[in-house]
Image (cartoon, rainbow, N blue to C red):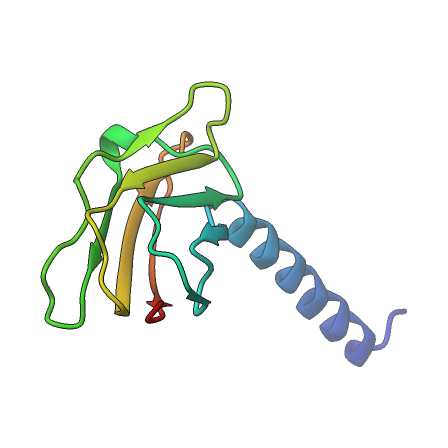
Length: 124
C-alpha cells in the first residue's frame, strides 16, 4: 500500500509537470532587439521580437509608444516565412527617452499571449 503522503506528493508533482507543459504551448517572448529593459545608444529603425513558437502576424499586434503615449512604430508588423518565430516592426526616428513595447500574439496553434516591456534610447 502506498502511503497517502507519497501519493499526494506524486499527484502534486504531476500537476506541476502538466501545468508547465501547458505554459510552454503558448508563444512566449524569448528575445527582443532592442533588448527587454535595455539601454541603447543608437536609435533603431526596427524592433525585432523572437518567440518560443511560430506566430501569426495577421492575428497579432505590436505597438511602440514614447513616454507621452504617442505611437512611434510604422504599424508594419511582418514575419519572414523562413523564421515563423521572428517578427519585426518598423520604427520612426526615435529621440532619446524611454519607449514601451506592447505585444499581443496568436501562435500558429491559435493560443494567445501578451506582454509589454520598455527600452531606453540614450542621448548620443
